[in-house]
Image (cartoon, rainbow, N blue to C red):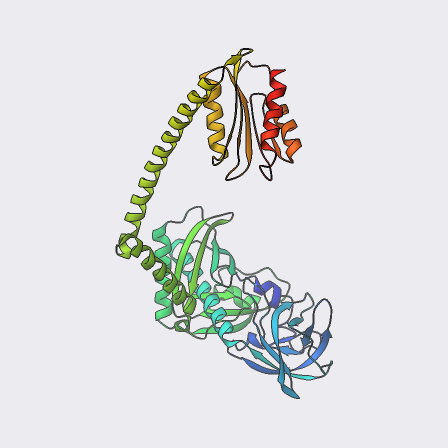
Length: 430
């Protein structure tokens, strides 16, 4: 499978080769992902744009390679009680790791000793997700020759993008099944450091482009060998289980969303609770939910059609009644009407019926749910409904538009509607 992008950012830029250099931060997590506490010396104290520290060595993982950063705490070695939370950890181009603090750490200067503490729960979660990604990506390659081109770890779920033109549910399930078999076998996950020449002979899925000669490899015994700078479990059994949630077409192929470990348990519990609650609404078992949902959707579609037809009939009947109430003048009937509780769609439908049943001009308004106006005329009438509506809306602070025969618009309130409609009607009878 392809290398993790962390390799390019945190390894091939030089930290592994020169991790004991004074110019770079020594990355303790390269050798021990289970190191949660460490001592270090402060190299730099940053105050702007937010407080941060650069240390000579760190166990905090910075965001890179699709894996999000660690959090935790840092305290002065002379005052362990006064510790501050680490809110973000980031890489710099010159090989340093920046630790952003929730507030400035008092009495700490370059050369001061500090004590770092990793949020172990978050770290273990990240190890489970990242190691699961390696196993799942390798499963897709072994079964279907679908390489992973990118990896993303979020707070709730993770995803891999596969380079493939198609992906079936059966293929996703097969890869998930193989991945979980590797988890159950509790295979060792080893960290190895090799030269590029040695790595090429070991059968990496793809060698990352680099100027440096040394690579950090994550070796899932007899299953996957990948260049990566992230944190990982020591045995696949520590992943705890892998659950593929969904797949969808993405720009680069197909995106597969998954969770692992405690996240998988939490997600499965939430899914089960949701299904149980939904099944209760139908008085059915969770396995009958799809059937009942499809049935409910069919009923909704049927009711919607009946409702639309009833609205059509109502509009037609109301149009006939309104037209019968006004005499014909100058070759048309002028209908002016304000409704208290009709929406804009009904106004447009009524205007359509009015102007098709007879030569007519309709000036319609509604107060609720949203104040709106619809001006319409039958084909061949001499007026400009868009211009008339614009002039009317300008008087009441509204906006709208349309064509010569049909225009619509809205206003912030219905105040002044009656006077505005009466004024518009007067312009038509001059």
